[in-house]
Length: 66
Length: 261
Image (tube, rainbow over all chains, first blue to last red; front, side):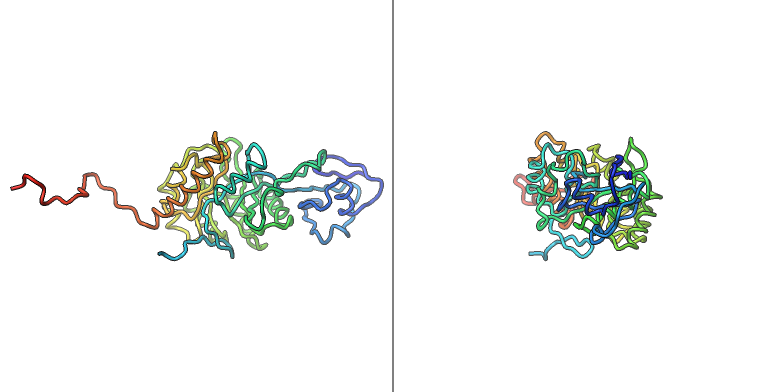
């Protein structure tokens, strides 16, 4: 299945949770936030929400800005 | 001594009235030092996609002591209400702050706000419990609308973002100060210390700047200059300046001068 993460297509072999995606991307334990199809996914739900074919995910963090 | 002069925003009290951005520094280390020297207690950050190609990259937050600084995420770069609201929600979900410096930009060249979208986004986020600090133009009518919409402060620009043109319309800022009861924080346009001092002398509750410090030849020195400028301007405002007059008034006694008959 295909999903889009931060504007780029990503191929996944199976439906995985958001938590698993974060781990796969090497972002575990980082202060970040996740949006799935334009809706924020609360941290406590990262372990239960599963990604489906065609989903769009945004993973953000804080950078320097004014 | 006078009682402690603090700025209240949301449910927090701040001694420093200088808000500092974290963009454009040459390194995170320099960012950290500039924050330290400026004495700021509130620092702005931007919300961006994580770089998935290099997730091991250092994070700005590793350099910001969250015990010491209140993080104020912004929605810079958002040109629509929807994007600004989504960005604010993501920022809050990241778990560092319920505050948001709300920007809805109308035009790339001026980075002036899209007031209509800004007001609407403010209403949405206030309803969701955010402490909303909207970046607005120096328009008293807009400031009042934002206050009525529940903004915790209004942040009129002194001049376009990053322009360094200073407080271009101090009279509008003054009218805004008379129009709203929430704190007024000048955001954007400050180029040097006197600009910050002028904003504070007008009676503003704070000044927010980024490029003014980060873009200086010696950012750390400018951070120090801004610390004193904001403080000096605030003290001068509290002290109450003398009225301006066209002609001289002698400061030495005008009697008992030698040679008088």
